[in-house]
Amino acid sequence: MDTGIEVNNLSYDYGPKKALDDISFSAFSGKFTALLGPNGAGKSTLYHLLTRIMKLQSGQIRIFGNDLKKSPLSAMASMGIVFQQQTLDLDLTVRQNLKYFAALHGLPAQDLENRITERLKSLDIEDRGDEKVRTLNGGHRRRAEIARALLHNPRILLLDEPTVGLDVPSRKAIVDYVHMLCRKEKLTVLWATHLVDEVMQEDDLIILHQGKICAQGNVSKLSEEHKCQSVDDLFRKLVMSGEKA
Ligand SMILES: Nc1ncnc2c1ncn2[C@@H]1O[C@H](COP(=O)(O)OP(=O)(O)OP(=O)(O)O)[C@@H](O)[C@H]1O
Image (tube, rainbow, N blue to C red; front, top):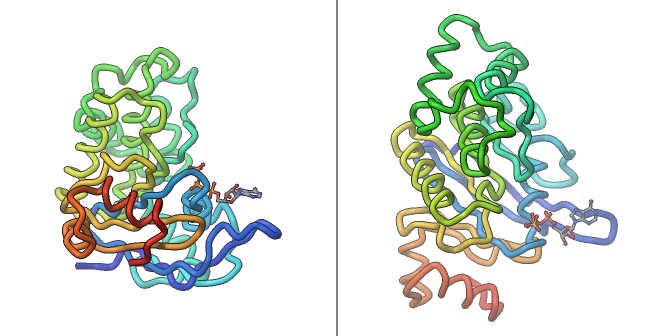
């Protein structure tokens, strides 16, 4: 199993506020790694460092073995990103948004229409392709953003709380789709959430709390080790009670 993301001894502070405190973890190809943490745990800070929106202060990030600081372009080219805040242009159609992204990233024009169609089909929104994003509901907007993030066939998909504000069926559809995609395309998925029901038994889990990792590993193994029946139990035990893994 290839290591898509390797984070070593990463710390980040906003002045006196320590947002990440010496965290280390790996995320692997073909694995859905859930980064679970309550509000303020440090999830967005980590995503901003992984996507180079913010500069590293201390620690190291490797993307498929390459230091993100030393080889930023190849690392970034292998990433698809879905941010917490929606970033589609509401007055463009779904297809226009995807084409604009392709142009910005210098993707070849050849066969682009077909590739867009394929991605929209796989997310079950092909019929909405020529509609302005403004007319779409939150779930369909999110699917369009995922289709866009996958257009350049990245090996890593980073999603920062992608289901915030969605209703339960839309949430479930997106969670299921990304799990399926992860298996099928052997993607390294890092999925930040504060919702325990988005994590499945076969996933890898990182529990982040107040900038520190309180547990990490395969969900089934962690549940067994901590004698927990569910991710919810595990989260309560480790985060609420402050027990260390
Ligand atoms: N620009 C900033 N200046 C000062 N403190 C900040 C800043 N951004 C984040 N923080 C603090 O750093 C900590 C981690 O925040 P971060 O946004 O990374 O957490 P999060 O897990 O993504 O939370 P949320 O789910 O609410 O977005 C929090 O205590 C937050 O208040």
